Image (cartoon, rainbow, N blue to C red):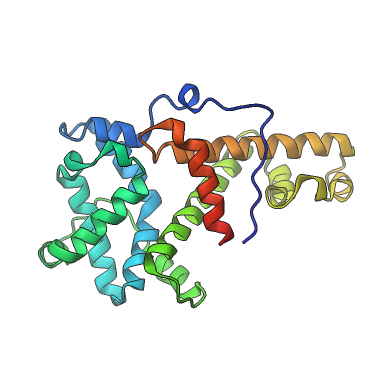
Amino acid sequence: MSVTKATSSGPVNPRAVFATTHWSVVLSAARRDTTRARAALARLCQTYWYPLYAYVRRRGYPVHDAQDLTQAFFAQLLERQSLASADPDRGRFRSFILAAMNHFLASEWKKGLAQKRGGGCEKLSLDWAAAEQRYDLEPATRAAPDTLFEKQWALTLLSEVTARLEREYQSEGKPALFTAIKHTLLGVRDAQPYAELAVALDMNESAVKVAVHRLRKRYRELIQAAIADTLFDPQEVEEEMRYLFRVLAA
């Protein structure tokens, strides 16, 4: 998958834009089981559940065990004060949650599996059939499960950002425009087929270039926001964005 970052018109001040992230809300409320903290954690879990499910599968667990383990892990994470020991100095949520899953698999999964199997305790709505279908379509690789988890994290984050961007265009009454130019999010901006798009959209070429510029700018903003939600320190957004694209390029 080839992905090129959209450029912005000027420097970004992440702290000004992302004063409070979902991860910082979760950590600050770790010892207080607040509704706000649980909602923030649930949203983060929705982003990470498939990468973790694929990670468990890559570890060699069969389908049903991997499903039960992933569900039990998130149920435990949401029910207990598991975040009380999280270290803000290691503030990337993906690092925390993968370490937590490894600990769960190593020392607590038997008890969690016995409690959750058939117990009807679903804290998250997870589409297991779609997850396994997606897993089956992944190419064979000798890469370590940890490495594949990082890539799934990056792909899932970009997929969610693209879906949110599409919803914004739909709400603005511009679904056809999004469909026509969404492929311009990939590759170099100067290499885009502006003339062809102008004909297809019945717009002049300059207007198409402006529309593509706005799309790519908003895409970058949404990526920044999604990444910021997974960090304790918003100042790390740009560094994490660079890491995301390195993961995708590997």
